[in-house]
Image (cartoon, rainbow, N blue to C red; front, side, top):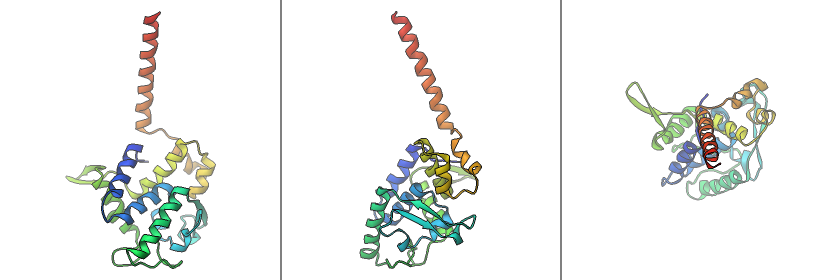
Length: 209
């Protein structure tokens, strides 16, 4: 399971945030990283689902297991969404009626999973330099689903229990959520670095005696 490191996450957000005319895509990346929504769930979100609300209700019909759930929206995301809705109406001339899609294409239709994955997330991955080579071509290092994994990995790193993450993620079993306890390669590397530094400090202290 692939997650963005914190540096990669910052690079992705910075690239979209600082690019002129990329307001929609920046908000999309922020929302994905802060809610952990699946692509199908994300594309189904309407304006009324998030307007002045502290949590988003994911409808049962778009849930993987057919059960609805609530996903908290932190204060920062609520502020970003308020600004997005104002921009959506004033600068983009898009509907902000409750039943209108929260995000649409340039042609005005609701985003599809393909739009979200290929035209937005993977595009910004490449622009942020988060790439790899496949069959001689430069492609995105991570998928849109990796942002979901990154959201819950960050939660786990900050001490959020697996039971809470399971509820937010909409996992049917706790076993599915357990993957977020697995150590990443970066964490293993950092652990070895801490060990080496600790040994070096111990040696200096011994020499000073």
